[in-house]
Length: 331
Image 1 (spheres, rainbow, N blue to C red):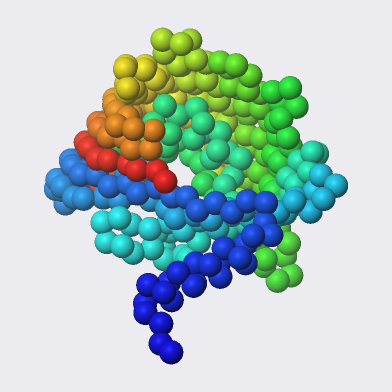
Image 2: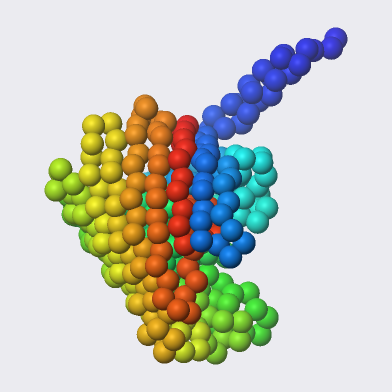
């Protein structure tokens, strides 16, 4: 006897539900984000386009946790990035390019293995008023490494406001355990309106002889009527690369929305004096708990020798000025 397509779909859903019933939790979640972006100041001229992931990268994720008894639990996360404007995969076409990890956790902390966010990026995302998205993203000027492959990460629980992370990314170069290796760490305090944290990231080059390293000190204080943010970064790249990052920002709640503003500076100390300043202003408005509208504008003033561009959460941008307006839905 043949079954109709709806019957087959229902049977498949029951099968999936039965297969995961032994887990403590299994969550399907995601973000769909799309906006119109207008960029100016590029050598090829101005451009207007529809872009996916302007405020937050569009994604589809699965995360789960199983209680193993004795306070021990198994955890995992699989998160795929995609482009709302074309339907294609993000992160260069990787299936789970945003996150892919599995691990164990107990009251002493979590130990996870896979592709994960770096402690340095998580700090910048936490203190940037624009959340490393929109035209005002601090990543337009501030140095950071977003994710690490082949990573073992240890994250502590919250101890009276104090937390820490250690991350080690295997370089996987035969005969040289140092080449392409990555190291990350952070230590922070968050309690009430105050957040303070320091993070470090180090990447060895393909030879294992030279490295690039960044240290970021960031903080945020919520005064109620407004929240102020501060970030100071020290960066040493391969060769003679040497620069400093500075970010000062504010978030002002206005009814169901919030005004965002920030000033970010790149101070080049490598001899070329290729400095740059970014001024940014934005606004988000919550239509509901899950859906918001957004708009933002940012301008970068590049010194001779600097070529920084105004991007957003998923694109590097093409010019020194950008305006965007769009919608984001979380589920």
